[in-house]
Amino acid sequence: MLKQEINELLTQTGPGTPMGDLFRQYWIPALLAEELPENDCPQVRVKLLSERMIAFRDSEGRYGLIDEFCAHRGVSLWFGRNEEGGLRCAYHGWKFDVTGQAIEVPSESENGNFCAHVKLTSYPLVKIGDVLWTHMGDPDKRPPLPEFEFAQVAPEQTYISKRWQECNWLQAFEGGIDSSHVSWLHAGGLKNDPLFKGSKGNEYNLADFKPFFEVAEADGGLFVGARRNAEADSYYWRITPWVMPSFTMIAPRADHPVHGHWWIPIDDENCWAYSFDYHPTRALTPTEVENMKAGHGVHSENIPGTYRPTANKDNDYLMDRDAQRRGEYFSGIKGIAIQDSSLQESMGPIVNRSKERLVSADAGIIKARQKLRKAALALREEGVVPPGVDPQHHRVRSAAVVLPRDESFIESSRDALTAAPGKPHATV
Image 1 (spheres, one colour):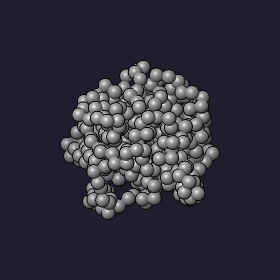
Image 2 (tube, rainbow, N blue to C red):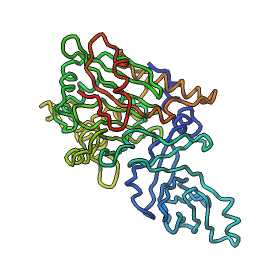
Image 3 (cartoon, helix red, strand yellow):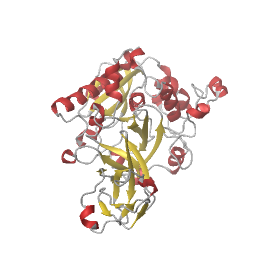
Image 4 (cartoon, rainbow, N blue to C red):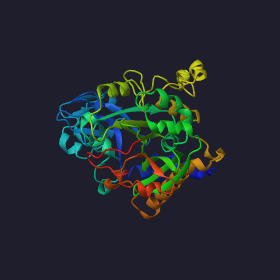
C-alpha cells in the first residue's frame, strides 16, 4: 500500500509540484519531428506537465515552444498565422518569434519599444533523432542535451512512434519495469507478434510464470532484473534499465530491434507513450518498419491524423472474446501496446495505490517509487540534482542473458548494459 499523500506527490506534475519540478530538470520529448515537417508549416498544440503551449517552425527552420495564449487578450495562437519568421495572432495581429518575444504589435505607433516589454513564456525545442526535445526548467541550470542510443544511431537504424494514453504517467511507467506480466498478458504476442516471436527467451518466459526479481542501483536510476529458470544450473535474466524520470527499455529478443519507451505527463490524468525500436548494428529492414507502422511490437495503430490509438477505451479496445478463448490474445485484445494501455487505463485516471497489495515481483516498482520520492524531496529541500540528468546516465542498454545460477546478474552483465556505437546487444 502507498499513503495517499505519497501517491499525490508522485503523480502530480503541474507547475510548482515536487514531481513537476523534478521533470523540469530533464530534457524530455515534446513532439515527434514529423509533427513540424517543414518551415512555416501549421503550428501544433502541445500540453506537457499541465502547461498548454504551441510549437511551431519558422521561416528559417527554427523551432519554438511558447505559451499557447496571446499576451494581448488571451486568444489561442493555434488559430494564428505562421509566416515571415513568426506566429501572428489571428485576433489583432500581434506577432511572436520562436523565443516568445513580441516582434510586431500593429496598433502601437512605437512598435519596437512596446514589443521589447512583451514576451511569452517559452522553452527550447531541439531536434535529436526523430524527436523534438524540450527543457522546461530553469534555463540557468539547463543540462547538456540527451544522449540516448535510440536517438543517436543512424536514421535507418531507428523508428519511433507515440500514442496518447488516458491515465497518469506513473501507472503507465510502472508497466514498463514490470517484467512479470509478460508471461501472461503478452503470451500471445510472444508467439505471434512479428517483432517479438522466434526468440529462445520467449520459451523461458512461457515456461516460468514465477520470476524472481532483483534490483540493482544505476547512476541514472535502476536495473531491474527478472530471473526465470533456464537449462540445468542456469537462469534466464531479462534486465530492464530505468533512467529517471521515465525512460525504460525492454530486454531484446534474438536479432529483433531493441524496444523501449519514454512516458511523458500531459497532465495528471493523461500521458504520452513514446515508443522506439532501434538496432545498434544494422539498418531496420523494410518489413520491420512496415510492422512497426502497422502497430506491432510496442507500437500502436492510431486514428489517422491523430496519435490516439484506433483501439481505445471508447470502443473497449476492440475486445475479441473469441480470440481470447482461442488463446490468440490472453486478454482478448490485439497488440502488445494496446494490451498494456487497456489495463493501465482500466485502473482509472490515477490509481488509488492505498488499496493495492504488492508482492515480491513488484520489487522494481517499489524501489522506483522510493527513488522518485527521495529525488523529488532532495531537489525541493536541498537543490540536489537528480539522477538521470547527466548524459552519461543515458548510455545504457537492456539485456537478455543466460547465466550460471551462482553468478550475479549485475556483475556479469555490466558491459552488456552499457551502450557503445557498433556494439551488438546482449540477447537470447
